[in-house]
Length: 501
Image (tube, rainbow, N blue to C red; front, top):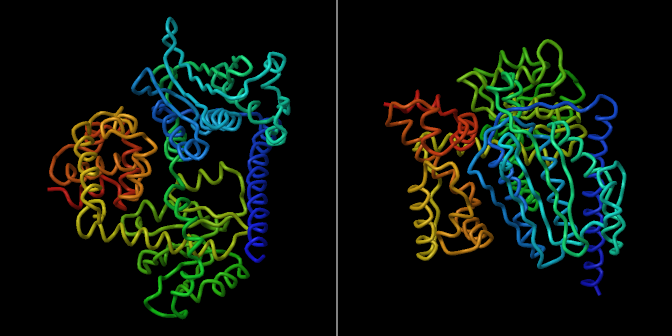
């Protein structure tokens, strides 16, 4: 009877969690909708490879495709295409279309994403998302992009999951790009969404501001390592807390807490002192006077403070060679995505909104301290990926994968699909196998081989950072610099200065 009771409770909790996620998604869409109503939507374009961008989003649906037994494919008629687009808004366009496709496609179906330059119109890009789902009736097609319009579905579960906002935002975001979106289908044969946007480049459209380029180029990657680790860390929370020693132990990490609120400082000291040594400062200017000599293991700072705010403090920390390897967490009551992107673009390692859960904050702090410690250790030894213990069959698979990646290392269009074909397995199988053996996805695996070779070239050649980035298949030196810093803890230019011949 106990097991039955537990199963029922688990079912209720699972339902609560699923509905909470649904509500969160709806709230986020409502915020976007409200923003467009009050202040109007604004485009923040930056030049980037839109093919790689869409491919990256499609890859994030691989686990869902496996779970629902839906075949997902991505095809592009062009290997890469650098053009101006707003990554935040185009990301929401692709995510919404893919989410809808998976929601309405039954088990055993397929979702296909394709990209091509229109024939006869070389200045226009066509993005197509098609599925073998339930389709859309003709009478619904003309209203599908209207706000709050919901299509009637025979399945009541599907009927209750929509808000009527997602496709409206798709239409608005595509229109901002001076593009069009339309839907074609036959009931029973699925749906086809066609997004057409003009191909624009910096040279033809004028320069993009440095802040705009930086914000758009980096914000896709701002949370990857911390967020991926939270699920497993939450499961181990009790064990982690038990492993810590008493407060004041000099072996404990040193935390600098920066906040102008005496109450919050007192709360933080009380909450963290069991696990960390604590030093405090009342604003960014006071903190900066301490940091170079103090060399804390991590900085936790409020954003809104007098004299020097948290963002400015973070900028100073991340642009000074003495302190650039100190992780920074910013605390703020600001909930807007733009504020979060601004802080993370400046260089913050994490961004926590108030009110926050102290246990989750501690996990984030410890994860960052551990991450930066490992990076520093790698730099002291040599900049190579961690060695792994593998069986003979696994070793052969990894060796074959490395050999193929290295043989094609300069090709920016080298894809997971191609690598999986070369190794004689499906993309999903390759994803699972490499994740089990190396702890990395196929995309991360390809990237680490490139970064390993980049470190070698930075040490041994006289080429500059941009030349090495392009030589190793990176389309954008800024992306290369971001990934290199994520892996080795320093920018490639700094690494070359330290380790180069």
